[in-house]
Length: 366
Image 1 (spheres, rainbow, N blue to C red):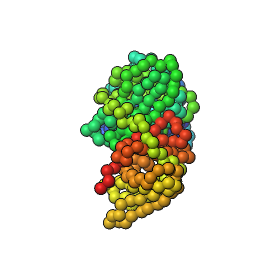
Image 2 (image 1 turned 180 degrees about the horizontal axis):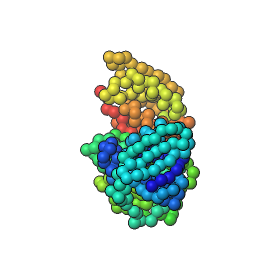
Image 3 (image 1 turned 45 degrees about the horizontal axis):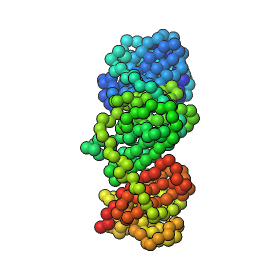
Image 4 (image 1 turned 90 degrees about the vertical axis):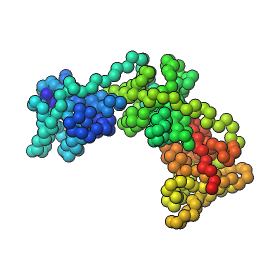
């Protein structure tokens, strides 16, 4: 195998491929990135056996072939080389990398490509979703996934088709994030699935904002295609909680506040929050909201901001991260905090309402 390619173009794709890989054992095929040069095209693959990544880039091929190289060192080499063309050549179990602008040569040991695990192929039809819509849905839900591995059924984002909408939901048992997009007809129904976060993070970070993403869902695998990229991920095989039971049906009390003002106030007050509980308090009177921390061995903090609220004084307390996380991914000027009974769930949504909302359970008062 021998080919010449642009360093920046290759580096971008290898960086994505390395995000997939979890193994750091140089002698394991799963630590390696697959390279195949053919017809002036380089095919790049990476896998951790659960998530698979494939893309293609243009190169100048002088000798066709394929191999796999240790991804961690390969990425390090590419990062160390200045802009320009790179020449790759393979001989037996080694691949040589030579930049055109530096008198340096790197050699990496390789493992034969025939040992690389095969990727699954979808048996279900693909449907298109605007990439901007899919990224928004991911950003508004993925942070609410549980990291408790004993509750593995909450370790991913629930994805389903509901009438003419695509819906994404995530929960860790104390909060719930819900986002939906109207995609009209033309998409076959599919059973709700639980998608691990790795593939969603890659789409959110790496996909652009123009065009569409093609999606296919089978019993055990999610497939996503966009541009030159083909991604697939095994699904979490479990029963997702009945999230609809958590969504409040009626909440008559509404607090409206500037999103950036409350977000910045929470950031400042949280500097003095007790680390174990992450508790902050919200005392709300008509026209003013007080955000404060418990007094502790370090000290305390309190800040007042203006709000719109008509009703009797109320006092709520939350894990501040549960309020902060959704506010950070919103771009709306104002948000509303809605509640009924004080010990029941609170809903955070943008003003005016859009196609997402966040449900948070308040903390019990000491």
